[in-house]
Image (cartoon, rainbow, N blue to C red; front, top):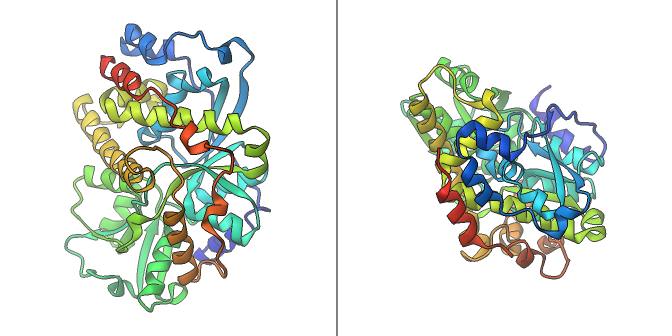
Length: 392
């Protein structure tokens, strides 16, 4: 499958069938607590199970996540299950993975999931290319995509990329859209001037760069932090306005949200709680994640080094969350829909010929009264206190 096949997939967004590759029901938070030796603190983390929501049957909800591997940087989606945040809202949530954002949104549009965590540009493409009313339940962060080359590389500017082979996690990643736009802005034709190849995650991407198979890698912030964990010295090339665009977001179909606005609020609110907990105690977030997903713990190194590497990843993730909190929510609202930021993204995609028309960006927002205020109806201090009380 070549790069153009992947981008053509955006135009078939509502028609293609993606395959959910992992459907893993998470273990109970009590089991995790026991495994980590923090049983006493879990009672504080989840709070007493006295809500009305817990007294009625839990509604099952599927979320498809645009990643092949649910590593520690997806704690905003794993911790709400571990700590019972979604259960408190009245939902039993299953997480599923997809190879990339286009596939995640395909699953959403196809009715295989209630929500999709995916790149903002994939949500825009769904609306404009396929006329599918995907809406933004919350925006997690600003864009943290960057093209990286080795410090010794002769590539120093975008125009130096002419003739280069660029590694991407897969050919459905939203990073391609971002880099193609930057190439267009610099008078280049992505179809002729660069070639994309899939280099996967972790060691395979690092080896592709070190061996010269690719001259650059375009990945998101936490992936780049992982490359640097291996000792790579990297130079970043970033579009000057990339970090003003929304990037990872939680999408939902308009009809789903209109039929059940409380569910859209509850799912987004649980994710925000996961972000707040992670920010307050990233070390505990890592160890909770390892207990749930032991296969994601870095292998072949001692625990102290593994923890340091994982905290490096979370530091990059938290920076992107904090940027979104500041830019989209004025340092007050998490997950807020900021029409000006989405408008910049839509116009960037149009100017770079990723889409052939524009749409009013605020059409992407949920229209339910005070949705973005309601998802922030959270006792932040209580969550932060419970996170800080978490001992390992």
